[in-house]
Image 1 (tube, one colour):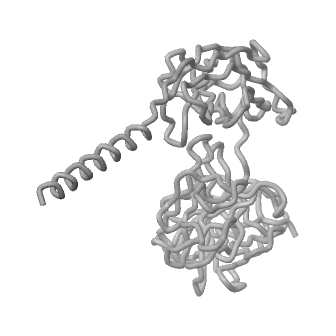
Image 2 (cartoon, rainbow, N blue to C red):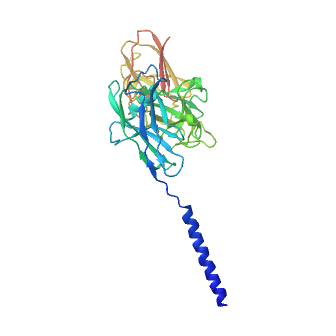
Image 3 (cartoon, rainbow, N blue to C red):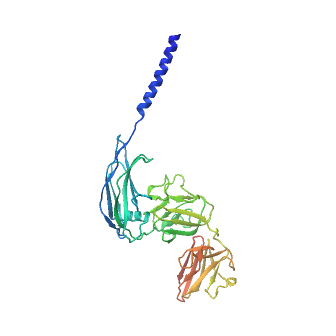
Amino acid sequence: MKNNIFKHIFLAVTLILGLISCDNREIITIDNVSSPIVMDLSANSLVLDKNFPGNPALTVTWQSAAYSVPTEISYRIEIAVDKDFAKPYTLATVAGSQRAAAFTMLQMNDAAAAIGLVPNVSAKMFMRVISFLGSGHSLAATSNVTSLMVTPYVLTYPDFYLVGGATYVGWTPEKAQILYKKENLSYIYTNLQSGENFRFLGQLAWDGKNYALNTPGTKAGNQYFKQWSDVLTKPDGDEENIKFTGATGVYKITINATLGVQTIELKQSPIATYDFPEIYLVGNIAGNGWNETNAIPMTTIGDGVYEFTSTLAGDTEFKILGQKSWGNLDWGNISGDGNTGFVGPKGDNGNIKFAGDGSSYKITVNLKAGTYKIIKI
């Protein structure tokens, strides 16, 4: 009996030691032996040309890093305005056996804008290469720092055209609705349909640039917006579009196209509907003289569209009212006085200013689309 007990104890101890031994054999330590070294920049200075955005501008080459165990290594090329890289910007990430990366005029100009270089002014751009393992960027090692002088050009921000089932225009790209653009911001007040999909185009056609959410499952070429309002999401089983989940109504869509920011915000308009029995014009138009109690009624065409025809002088200014008073229903030129062709509600508008020549003009206001037109007839 005692022998059996000793045998069982011996076997148990042997098994435990064996398991420990196996675990020890599976622990592998990987150390960085040498960091990557930037060997060459194809230029010491760059004067970027907006007329040739696709032309080659710069090639960066480096010597590979070394680790104590053969493994897949990735490289991240970073730039900054200072040699200490207080705010580094990732120019590119390269995996596998590549030891060089090439960049176009447009890519380098976008990169210069991202780190805050001033257009048309020559300034120093610092560059380094970081090696790492895996998606967690473990065992990172940093190269030496090198630099070049860069003269960027004035950045041109993209145009955004709205199209899709959630929109006023439907899925016809030739009718896609352009947003009003002012430098890095594009915006519009327009009606959106709950539960429907949409996207932004960079042109009045499917072929070319398409813009959607930068989220897993969206086609790589369509990924653009880095942050978005919570009423937007990626549709199930759809790799190209955006789904609008808010309540149906008029929203202000605001896009910030600043490189690296690239946000889209939706905020419901203070005038959330578009179809009114009657709307009016008030201003120095058709003898009104800014008398709101005698505001001029427009003809209702239907579905939020209204028209009025009159002779217009060179100093014409007017606004649109939903009542014969200065009440809450008030529209004008978006974000201030002017003639942009886009309407904004009370609190975000100014007078519509138009230089006529005394001829007859048709004024068309489309509150569903968020636009107006003044056409000579």
